[in-house]
Image 1: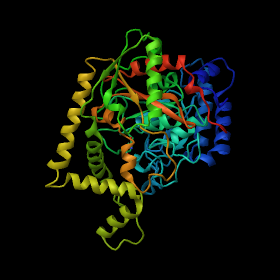
Image 2 (image 1 turned 90 degrees about the horizontal axis):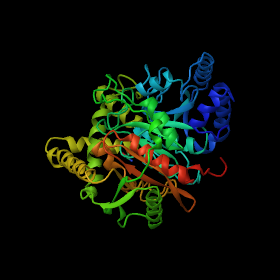
Image 3 (image 1 turned 90 degrees about the vertical axis):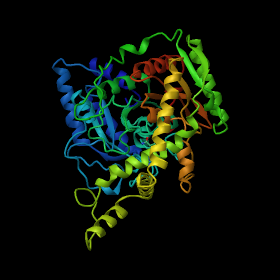
Image 4 (image 1 turned 120 degrees about the horizontal axis):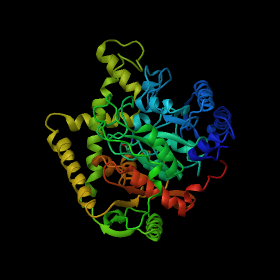
Length: 483
Ligand code: GLN
């Protein structure tokens, strides 16, 4: 049963082949057996899951239907879940039980999804390896000595290992697409404003966006349908109608204009990945797509701009963790300053502290114009590059990451080496565009992802292209040995 996709589960439940309760019990047992190798969960919510599964079975018995009714999922542990620990991968929030559900959590629960637990993640979503979690590193099911990517690495590892069919993630600079690529999944970062951020613990508010991680584009369509939509609680949520993503999967790719940026194939890209990306282009050409070389001339400035803007916003967002209102508080504070200093010094890990310092510096008087304002100008140039490109093409295609999953610990002593891995993903966040990563082959037994980017609110186009590709390739069906 653990091999079933969300779409297959929906059919099985509708045909009464199994109940949501049976499925939930099977998956919880599988998690108990296999997750110790992976460390992909921070918390399991067995009682809630069984209660939701029984409720979903009862709703089906009453004639209700729906693709998510009774479907098991998990949430990245930065989505607030009422009465359940919401740690954000940090000691700071190890004792924090959210007093309310994030909009995404509430919407999926209302659609009948069953929450099996909360998944591991880089502390405050800062990272690309899932090694900065207070709860320990997550392992890649394709090779337990390698990282699964981050920061949604727990969601990715769990889905890739068939512990469950799909999970939520968030993507500030690539944290859905990059772990999807490194674990052979399909992951989608929606347009900024498409999915509500209410109840998502903020990292960099102008970049953060929640989205689905699953094995197929078909399943991402199902999960995104349950997550997307206007939310008056989120002032940056956009009031655009949500199309029927599943209904749009079968559009023809005849005449689809694909742009391949020449800057993507620079020296930093593993040539074996470059070859797999070219193969995926050929595959799409067979389906009728037309390929064109394009240019994104300001791409080289994206990493420096992102690593000013994201830490600047983080330093502001994370100021609320002061040891007073909620979360970790140090023992025996001598006075208020000591309380702040030690609560934050003991509650935050090294990567989070580094980013807060960089961000506070970039925002400080005298440096604001030189760093923060400059980075915002670069952000606009990057957006303009994309707008020009989308005048000529319907979709932009390239690698998701420059390298396959690296060994655990390999980049620990050099944070900048890890930042460079974000080169292909962060531009979409800076511009607010939707992006998807899908499986495109293997290098040394490790998965490789191809990334597709589309104009604002064209998530449906991304899912359509990915689904057509997946009907004609079988990379996404490969299962890691031992799982
Ligand atoms: N790797 C990037 C960072 O560390 C992206 C993280 C994310 O998307 N949450 O900031």
